[in-house]
Image (cartoon, rainbow, N blue to C red; front, side):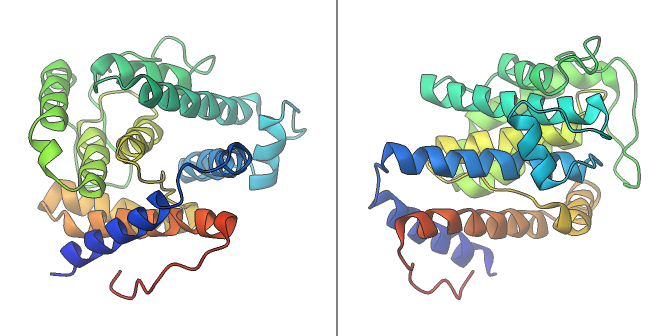
Length: 256
């Protein structure tokens, strides 16, 4: 199977990046600004937000974009705030918890839907276009507790990238909120990657169809590999801005 070789190649890329750490403050700031913009744009665009990348940049700079709804512009600023919170969690070395999950979700929906922000859903839902049917809302607290126990227990035995991918997949399978589960799950995935020293990855809007299909196959057929490989490819690409900033050429990654 190709997956172990893929993970080993990602470890080599991380080792190369680690050999150049710590990065300068200016380099870190520049990389972080670019990452937060692209992460925000793509995660929102996957969910139907119509702001372009440049419009997202303008909104994050505090300028209102004419012709775009306040809802969409709040989605941009809220997601940016959620990234800040994810970085705070990492800096404080906090253990994974339902409190963090609810706080991330509250930030994502702040001033958009305050009644549901940070609150487990109290209705049963379907995922449009997917075969997977999320569990009853009555099971959410139990399933979240099990999920956290897995992340902090058996999940720690997995490769960090594999664990991050499954954190995303398992969380979105539970679908604990009435809305914004996708954005929250991608933030949780990158929380796990960043804790382990990997760069956060971006699932691009151009890859949305393959992303949705891989998730649905995982939930309905138990086929994990396609989704894990999709995340591995995104992590590989996440190293590219670092190579550009450091002006280095990594060795061959043909086995990825």
